[in-house]
Image 1 (cartoon, rainbow, N blue to C red):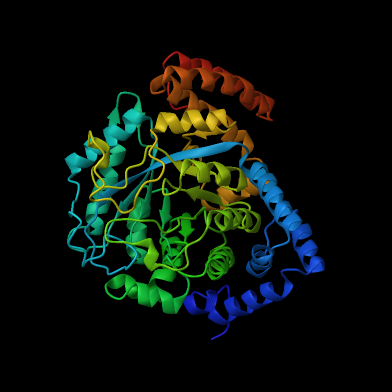
Image 2: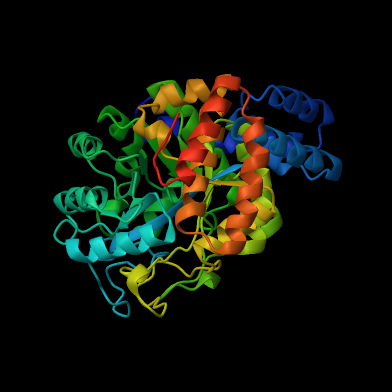
Length: 472
């Protein structure tokens, strides 16, 4: 079974022999300056590099080359995404799960964790709590359980979330992270108005995957790995990839992840809308000491930089699994979306005291959304609550063509500033509002198109007077 990135068979587009050859090639050439220079020269065009070329950069341990890799990642990130950082929050609907994943506390045999499932009224309360923070974009999460969490429950929950308008709050984009399903079910999710469909591969190493998933429907490696193709066949334009770094060797995972991105581009005509980079971390019933492939901070930062160089157009996500210090380092290297004020427990947003007994993983960054927004602006970033492209139908290849051409800045920059203005007017603390007003006044001048800039200035004035939801 040979390597074929256009194939729809998992073991052909994530081909074991191709991965091993790429790892061997990287090992042989990690100190070869001619090869390294050629890869970096290609990377500077900001059109991406192959999984094999990325492996060489990842393996390289020449200090000055590694500095050049980081510098190039910063430049590419700013070229495509500027200083904008999209804000979101996860919303856990249910931790009932029938799978036996050995790295997740939701696994079916865990008797310590209290099982919870939100009713539609519970969801309403959680969403109002999130709206009162200022969130506009959610990623809903649920364990795989056909009895407790059927697709009908997910669809009803999405409808509930979109229906809630509280004060000036509204959730404008619901991304969905649920188990692999059928083309027909993906079409139903599309009809429900979801944004991105997110599914982490966990590991691309088939043998490790099967060992880590001993029971439950998730144990089917091919069905899980081919999910994104079915999602796109079902009409979902935007999909989000990710691996759980630490389950298998990081270089193997990096190559597999980039092969998956190349496959989607080749077979579906558009690559991943987002790539997430979670690392395994402690949780109920899970001891990270059981996993010997843990990724240290320095390597983690380089992974982010190399992914940014390899897939320049993709949004990159880091969650509150990571500490404030780590998040600060990877923001400049490639991250364009982060969560803020997150709770990873079912019903966590309405709890007066944080209760992580039903959490999927321990949260390292426990700051409030306002504290995260304030911190980002002090670092010179623009916190964005924008959902305009999704709502204007600029998804999939339409979004990517705008991004790759550089025209997206005339949408994203003013939209980011206007949604930040909404946040400042409705939710921000006095100090955050002061910093934000100064930032908006400075950054609005960086909108290239004069007509767009003038109209954005007009909208900002109208936002100050109580109007909401302007977008380009």
